[in-house]
Image (cartoon, rainbow, N blue to C red; front, side):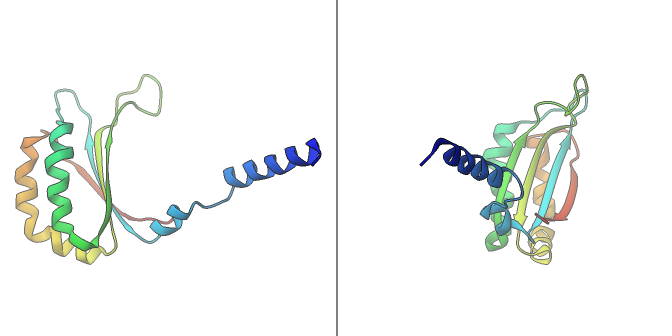
Length: 134
């Protein structure tokens, strides 16, 4: 094979992967319901990531049962803009198949979930429920 052809194929492959090609995992998540539990940063507020990761999130995940596809935990590091305060200390996200099943699972356990907050934070979370589009 000549060098120009090899380079052309390589560039085409890289370009196809970087632009407009949907990853298989993105397709699999489309249509899922995403529950983002965001813990805003503020002076004097605390967050125990170890407890959240090993106790709180597994507890809530257990309530969700087979409806739960996966969950993620993010630790805030910085703002997207230089010299700006951190917007969130942490974000916990649940991906579920059905919003109504999520609500049915969380409803009866709401008090237990809230009662666990003081074990890892002194901030009230902001919750966003959304649908994964892509």
